[in-house]
Image (cartoon, rainbow, N blue to C red; front, side, top):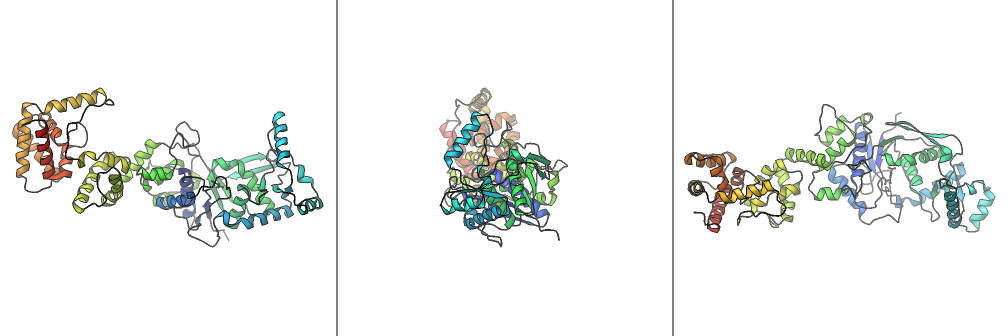
Amino acid sequence: MEKRVRTRIAPSPTGDPHVGTAYIALYNLAFAWKNGGDFILRVEDTDQNRYIEGSEKMIFDALKWLGLDYAEGPDVGGKFGPYRQSERFGIYGEYAKKLVELGGAYYCFCTPERLENLRERQKAMGKAPGYDGCCRSLTPEQVKAKIDAGEPYVIRLKMPYEGKTIINDRLRGEIIFENDKIDDQVLLKADGYPTYHLANVVDDHLMEITHVIRAEEWIASTPKHIQLYKAFDWDIPEFIHMPLLRNADKTKISKRKNPVSLVWYREQGYLKEGIVNFLGLMGYSFGENKEIFFLNEFEESFNIDNVSLGGPVFDLVKLGWVNNHHMRLKDLDELTKMTIPFFKELGFVGENVDQEEYKSLVKIVEILREGAQTLKELAKKSEMFFVDDIELQQVTEEMNSKERKSLEKLKASIYDPTAKEAISLFIEKLKKWNKDDFTIDEAKDLLHSTMEELGASPVKVFMPLRAVITGQSVGTDLYNMLYVIGKERTLKRIETMVKKYNIL
Ligand code: GLU
């Protein structure tokens, strides 16, 4: 009978949840889903020096946020638990000793001083550092005597001195390692803690993982893992090493050059759909130039053999583009609710948003989502809708000459003779308007009829109106402004500006 496909991610809780974890999770999830199997989460927290309190919870939250649901894990349980390596310590010591009995590992009593000396000597001779196999030849009696005498020990992998270890990577084909180049890796440390290699292999075996899909940075570890499987006489899972995510300069993705924390992306207001879509594009191509998709489409189309190995660049411009598409595809009401925390953060709305306010937020989101890449950017662009006590925008240091020029034009426009007429007529029309709000078309009609009745050019009419309604030379179209703020607030703005600048 074919084994049920089981895949996993095995992050270490050593900091903020990493985009790389989500990327690998996505491919493991899609592969398991496609094959009717299970995708699970195991926490590899055996390295006490790198452990960071709270990191594990952030990983759970980030994966759940993205909808990368694992069927088993520390917080959801499952029949292969516990799923936290720190809760499985007893197991690793047992298996390390079993491996000694099977001849695949040995006790090593070398002191840290001896190992340090060895390293120094190797360095001086220009040799690669590595254990020299000193304790490999101890007899069982010698070992027993040392243990009985309470000598500290580690357990090391007994790498064959000859031959090759071959990884049959599904995407990369055969990757061949000369065994004599591979160190006798420590499996169990003197304090009884397992190393990554031992814990990882034992758990993948006990949790019945059939496919190990992980980043290419683990390739160097895989021959050691294969030797462990062989020594235990266990089935070797299929290995699939995914291309690493890269900075724009093609180096491995790093904090210094790219934000890597999923928390950061969430706080910036990237949508989960945008992140998942973008990560899906990193190693996979749908064909037919389809670049925008949802998780379920990705899962349905997924074929691991089509993963491409070119170093995918984690490009924020592309991510912004993808995210913008998902902002536009999102239900407007839902998107508005998601944007409210960002409006609050900027102080544009208070703690409680009433119905009237909410209605105008929906309109703001409707208008601005076209041109924003994140919810935060959308909120930032919305300032002109909130503050009614406006004034003419001032020239600032950062402005380029084009921006300065258009501001000067805006300023001058309010003193043009036509401006007075345009503003007066527009006030009149507004006062006659028999509702408080406008549809976008109604707002357009109102503005255009003002221009037509005056028989003046668009610039002569719309520029001063823009000045007295927004105070700014750039930004959203005037009709959008009317659509959002309605009749009373438009009138109030115009009246304030007329007074401030002695226009009429
Ligand atoms: N604990 C390793 C990590 O932090 C797991 C690597 C693997 O998937 O084997 O990514």
